[in-house]
Image (cartoon, rainbow, N blue to C red; front, side, top):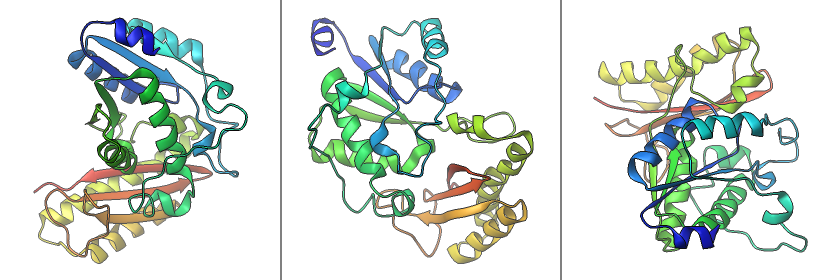
Length: 268
């Protein structure tokens, strides 16, 4: 892959994925095509970012479908390495980012971000891109990877792209496949609660505790099991007492056994 990259003329855009592509992924590819001469997409379900009780073995996979979707967009290269290539026997090296990984998803998913930062470091070293495109749905992941890129002097610009939603407002995710029709309806409470947070702020309420409690009641009314609801500074990811324009509201909720995340940037 590095040999190919160095021989090409122009900018290289990279979109790392775990496959089972949806319109959110494809929006990243389209943005990469706008900004780059060569587009590389990786498809790899990274075992290092799954906990022992999580859904690694059941994570949806359909490589042939993914390849067809990417071919329709005329992606230049698709990279789908094996576990043996990424984590050979006697593998001992890991990349960790401190502080940003101790909050939000990092609390309930120990070592998740260590797996993310390690695999992305390896992929960036292999592909050697000028740009890497990540969705804002995984806002904490985006913040962690930007921190890593800055700290380790990667020459790659990491570009966050807007979260893409289904027509009914549910944030697009490969894990939406797990949801029954009834659970899908229940999951709409995530986006509704985020919209509620924005409406409350716009009405003059800026107290985080009040807004979180209102969101909690809305979600629990639909039987969602809340992992967290946090209102944070977008740079530090630390919780804030009062909302301000540009802060982020993030949440993780179990609908049945499926853990979904979503977030919103607070505007005026």
